Amino acid sequence: MLKDDLSQNLNGNPFLSPSKHSSNPVNGWLDRLWLLALLAMLVTGSLMFRSGRYCAYLGTDFRGYYAAAQIARERGFDHVYERAVQVEYQSSLLMKCPGTGAVAPPLQVYMPYLPIYVLVVLPLTYLDFTTSYALWSLLNLIGLIAYLQYFLRAVGSSISLKHILQWIVCVPVLSSLALGQMNVLLVICLGEFIVALLHGRPLRSGVWLGAMLMKPQTLILILPGLIIGRKNRTLAGFGLGTLAVLVSSLLVGGLSGVTKSIILAVQFAGPLIQTAASMMNFRALALNLGLVWPAWLAWSIAICGMVLSSGLVFYLWRREDAFASSTSIILLTLATLAATFTVSWHSHFYLLILLLPLLLFLDSKSILPPSGRWVWIVGPPLLYLLLNLINPATAREGLGLGMLALGFGLLVWASNLIIAKNLTIRFCGRPFR
Image 1: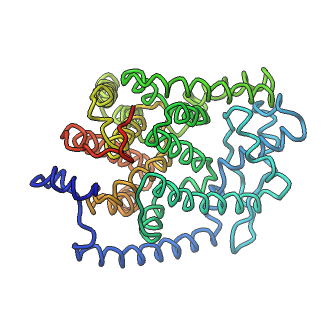
Image 2: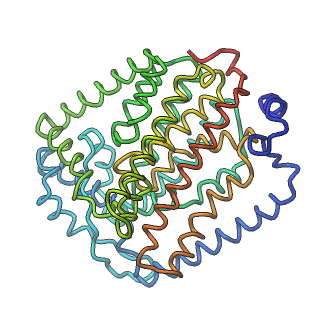
Image 3: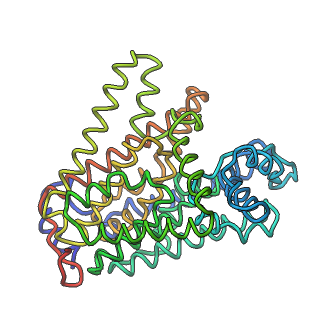
């Protein structure tokens, strides 16, 4: 078994040694504490939303998706990416607050995705906005749980439903559901990319990567890594996937729709987004340090962080032992995505939801230390609570920097495991090519 071989290979190193869930009595108490934490979050959330105070934040991103689909259905795709038309439609999409019946003033976010992704939400526009958001969130939650169970079976592992629920009751998932994001689709695309790789189907894996063009910033290190690792068939598959996304978008939205969506996506890296300082990347670190230090020093530190993260990932992709086993491939993907989130110019902390299948696999194989699960679940909300007590005005920025530290820590941890040269188990008897 993978666990037994890893135990022998990593013996004697407390940083690299696998965890022992069953033999650690602390985990029983942590499981009980998790239930208490879940109950506390449900009660707190109910009180906040009943007051109507936070209702305006519900479905912020989904409002953009819904409006885009409405515009496409009523006026055509040529108008989906026009900001004036978006403002007109989104202004009428009011969220009915749970418990109070009050209507919250809408927060507006434009949808920069290619036209093909607008079709995902289009059927929901036949329902009112509040109902469609509730249904969308429910479908995403059920879909996420079901896919995580499927993914673990597909990669030859398993974990209890209780542990899956523990992992998904976290800030990245809850914030993604609250905003109405499409990130569960990205989780599925990434998971299928890994499943195809491990089953020796690199062309198919690349096609799934092409579907992740919904948020192209997630690919900024994976694609160079594939080039460095000379994974030509996966790159060819990515080319096919990209072609399929672009051609289908052209058929749906025309050349004008595709062009406007790309222009709007580029603007998301500029002044269109006002929350850059609360992101989980080195850009946010520079923006926050620049408030107290000279700008040149703040950006020098940030650039050094970007170079270090990217350089470490590219070094890993050059190593032959990074592809020796299913575990090492998943660790490589984890390191690559963790670095991507720190380097990407546009990187909100809800993108960490993409790490869930990877972390669940490592947890199921007892490679991830027990403390890792609790840092993931409890760390961010405790940090946010503490920052709120100190200075509520900067709590969101502090949480973003905390997520930056989490991402960089995962990068270092996964890289250290790969470099240890101890992961030699093959998947289904076949090496990765």
